[in-house]
Length: 481
Image 1: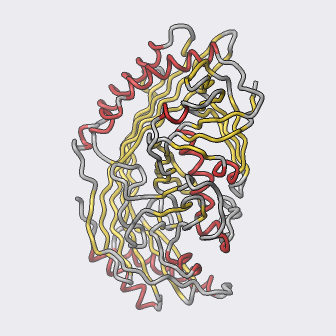
Image 2: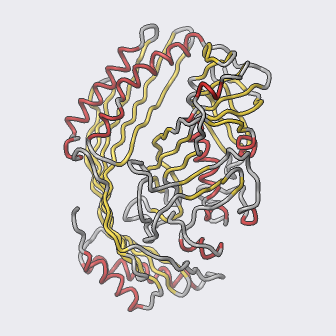
């Protein structure tokens, strides 16, 4: 692991305290990103980017101030501390309630992701070969429709951090990540078009793309989607049991459990930025949102995950958080500030995109708890229903209550078996309506890559969302042309 200058970072913290800050935090972060982009197998872009600097956050007279610098000399850090101090002191005059942090057991630790194969082995040339292999697999698999466009983006990122604060945290981490995006379009002159985005990502080394076997996956998916485009029928008009695939479930729990359970949103702090939340503080531990099968977990400690970390950017040890537990709204995501307001402990949700971004309450890896059924058992007694395997578009309101998901690959269920494909079934439902309709979940837990956006200025951080396949009782589906 490369070594940031711990003495310099500590000196910045001590200097902030000498100015009169009651809390001081300095976070060194270095992100190295390499990527290639291919269109129809031809390279259209390649590049490398390094973002390196220190973010300083101070608590002065009950107000927070933040500043950042990429000047890693003492003069640069001192200037950043002075700016953060001045901003906090100025804002303190306007605050009605002082900001106070919860008391926590903070980490003094070094950790890193152990890779099977060095990330250096996945250089630009290797990523180009990989992208061409996936492109060829997509273009050669469609036999009855045309594939006019295939876009592949492959990237690696190495995130190094050193976090030191005046409450005793000293946390070093090194997390390499790999991501691959495949986007393609199928076209038929009579039936129209179909577009699909497949995303793979996680923390690890050059072994990850090999483990994903993306070329094999897209070959199968192109053939299935070709069948959907050419032969799909409208969904049933009556209410039927609907089995929602893990990809849709993962997105749904990210949007309808993860975001509304961010404590800053519950307090209204994100209303003018990322949105609001239907959750109110008096609902915690009391309000029933779904059946006993509705347990949504948020866990940054999952090995190999895109949202992996063991300590957050305030130095708090990470652990699984049960947002909804057996149908009850249970535990919001907290940083040390919101935890103090709620009278609880932080559960390590403070996370920043890069050195120039302030840590805010963020998700990591969010999923619906799986059950013990097989997929066959999940659908075996469904006389007539619909299985929505993947989605093509979605939207949700600011309060995270009303939502809509349009199916991409979907099938009729007839007498316990998958049958003909279904065209664009629309699941339009409230958050409570979804979780209260769950009557079965299988054991097939799968995760999907996402880039979660939040904050002002906007921050995007890598996450996983996932779940099993979920059966909903008596849902009336819509349809789009």
